[in-house]
Length: 569
Image 1 (cartoon, rainbow, N blue to C red):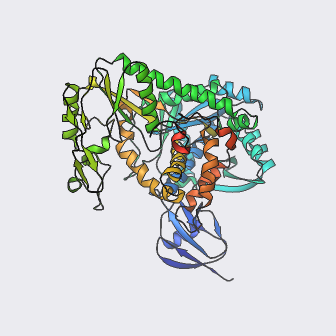
Image 2 (cartoon, rainbow, N blue to C red):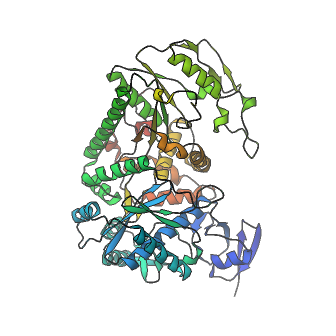
Image 3 (cartoon, one colour):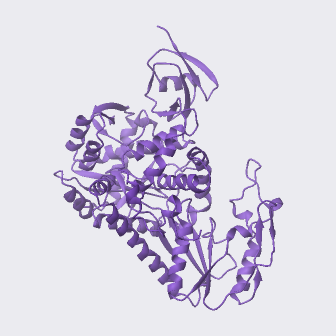
């Protein structure tokens, strides 16, 4: 039998193997350790058979796609364990917390009725005890010990719909039926099948590290950290963040929107305009509520600090809150944090010897704190302007003095880090965390990633306003996201208020702009695999038409990304 020739990027060598050789067999031959692989820049599970010459790159947990495969497999393991222990219950994976994924167990619907399904999800949450959590975790460990193959099968659309209907996963069955694909990839652990919209590990035995802990009424399933040394994170109860997710989830349930399928249904029924109006009205109430909190402390608060991860809509959020403060009689003054960088020669360097402009040490903390305290004491100060071309601060006569109704607003990645304003009294500060914290799901056990949501926002904005291609945005994202884990996420709970900038209509809106950009990425690009993953995700979403886009208000946070804002950025 003629052999095929496969190039392994990890070793830099060619290997001759028989047609039909699975990636896991090639992995053993190359003596690498992996969770998944790129085959000609397309993500595949290790059970994928090779029938022609290919270029292969094996991925471990240090790679984002390796981590996603690992996390999906833990969720599948959890789903299987819960189905074994509670055959008449259903796992609902709602959203991702800093500790891991939050989930609840509810009654399984007895009929294919969307209204009943929504009511059951809201009213039948099983409050788990520590003993029940331990029981589920033990069952998961047993399945891992059995080292059961995770097999991928192609089912016809009708077969997949029937399978999930029998499993009483009616949301999943409805979504698959509406998509109308001829074949559906379904993964199996033994005789239990499910979809998780991406490759899995090849066996349950490959799942080495996970944890399950009680959280609120449900639980948090933990997986290793995204950062070296990739260990399980310490238990951290971030109640403020959890409550923002819970509030958004409850609000979505109240208006009858719990997943992508119901959003698609609303768009196809011609309700886009109404959906936009409701979502924007909620934002307006939130802006006003935060402004009211600040006004209640106006005698003390002189500095508003706002932070959030990339593409959270921080600029629009600060402007909209500033407008609400003006309505209340206060005068917000923006103080740009970028002007307080240390001079270039004093900037710390990272492990690669490059200037680290994102670390706290890149900020002139002494000057910042001194000038803030002088301003709060009623004195006039000369604010620096940072010359990025020269790499140094310049004083150009920009003098500021605060009036009795003035209040400063500063936005930046370190805004919630106490060390940034360590010399400022706590009573003087009001801290806001902004992020797009969607609680929408694809189906019962596939939540929408807030990170993907933000990356799509950034992709559209960068293309519209910064001359940056989708390919460049994707290739830079790992660095951006890594910085968020170091500089932003650890300080979320320091916020006095959290603003959720997500909107239930934004994915159908962003699809119109993002999909063509992703399709331009060529197969040879290192961003190609990620573009395919995002395109697959967008394929579940019904796109809003350009005519419907007109209903998005000119002051909406979405205008920061798609254009057409009347705010002065």
